[in-house]
Image (cartoon, rainbow, N blue to C red; front, side):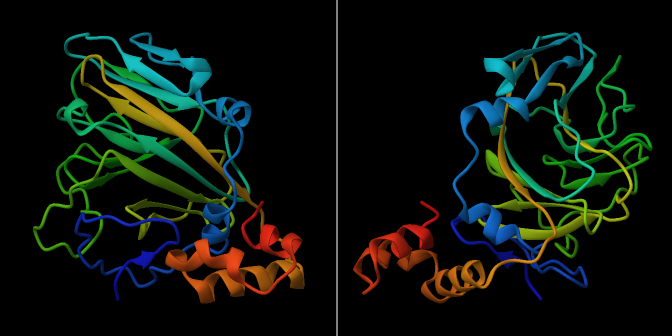
Length: 263
């Protein structure tokens, strides 16, 4: 069983087959990613918190990105402004490959997780208050010091997955899972058992002057959908991502065409 392809994404980056027992997308993820993204104000409200980050990090553009100051022998983290305890949430992290260094970790943290340490390390995931994916090594960390950390995606059999500049973080607080997606492919759950917590977007970095952007993509709550909405999902699924641009040619009223396109 391979990873699950998401609507709206494609990449030439290989994604080796994983061995998780359930790689299906969290319920509602394709719908979330198909809807128009939140406006700039909402993205800033869900962006990096200038009051909740290492002193070596400067948050810019109202929270849309941060820059780490070039401080030697320090690992520095940042937390998002909003914590999530319910619903399905997704956000995009943009982190240039040449700015990652030896320890570039992306994930979530509680309000208690430390955001600075006086040596180079995978800080996020090194304790019981945070969970992270080292996107350079492909390792998962939680209460981990590094050795023996599991590979993600699982089952790559030594093949290193190259994580591109942009990746999605998918936090499902209804099921208590954290997973990632790259190039339109959901890689499966990386962590389970997160229900009952309040978790914030978080990263930890070591590269001097690295710039890490966050773009909040929205939320879905577990609730019954209308028949109209379910019909829209069925039509979009039948068309597929490559043919959505042909909705305008369908013999439908203009209002229905706009509805199909989330306009």
